[in-house]
Image 1 (cartoon, rainbow over the protein chains, first blue to last red):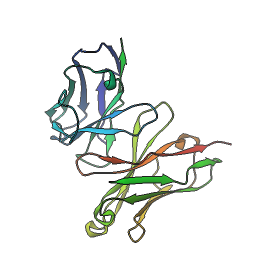
Image 2: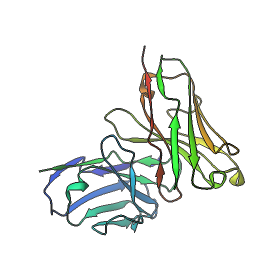
Image 3: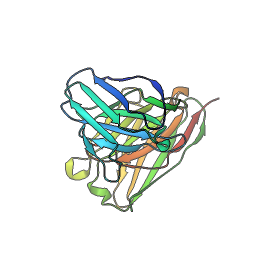
Length: 107
Length: 118
């Protein structure tokens, strides 16, 4: 199974900060990567698919990049509603796998 | 509007069984590949398994930790997805979500909680 390693596992940031989360795959997955946001008690919400395509309705401050084994989720200017846990997921091959998550907390 | 509504969760003893259901509406369920994803308390997301549409063969894939114990099925006439869980273990305690999407899981249910405890 393809392993996805996210870093950091948690971070503290302030409103307005630029935040970068990385996701590294144990083998190449082309661009078959999605990013999700999850808030406590809620189902995950899809933000980005195919590594860099923004889902409809997702604010443009979110962006994704990368291909192969190294991927990045960037929030250009952190907003209060962005404090949440973020997960990457690969769709390249079964079993589908998720990264361990990155919790973004208020500094 | 796409809606996925899970049901069937609850408290069960180790070794017991439970069947979860996911009622779908707002899209052509019979064409959709459906998955189950779970989340143990305080932990991350874990893909449980997937069933293809019948047009694409209707086959299933299950994650290693549940293979041989869990079975995903579907009833397209009822727009319903199922997860039959047998030989439950304490480590199966989680919120179980049904979800669908092609390049990402765009649609999610609200989840149903399964607790395996004696």
